[in-house]
Image (cartoon, rainbow, N blue to C red; front, side, top):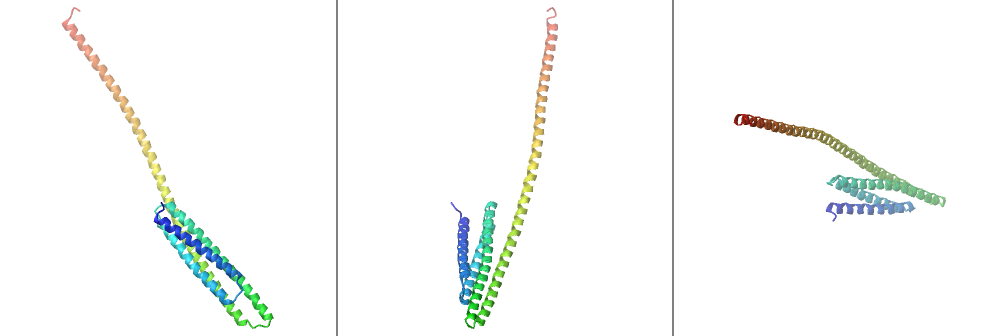
Length: 228
């Protein structure tokens, strides 16, 4: 039966996948957008909101990983989080490219309008300012992801350091066990040696006692029965 923590991690992962798919669909809409400017602004505003939600859920999953009791569960969730973060970075790159493609489409449309005698200088200026702002937002998002990845790398280094320390402790304990094993083996040999010595001493005592009794019997025999 899944624990409450596992359920929360699974729900968080499903929400991340949902935001990822929504962002991909919006990026495709931007790539195919040829204007007007208001439509592009709305699309970019929605994409930015979805990225903020996605980033928050990734941070939530990372926090859940830190709260895990077992190191294997922690590393599994962190690995999944890193995969989502890389996918988010890929989406942000695609977002930037989609805006560039949209800009080219709008520029081409403006050129056609100029050739037809239309006055679109103001609209072109507004479009370029909007695209500059959009590029700035995308750059900010990429920098945010970069900072998150830097923090993740630092946490991974700390985890590796902890594992290395644990490994050294295990090796030291193993060496102590080997030393104890040698001591126990030496003690066992000494005990066996003492047991053999005790058996020899008992045998000598028995022989000495037998000799003593034989001597006493011989003397008694000579005293009591001198003619035998």
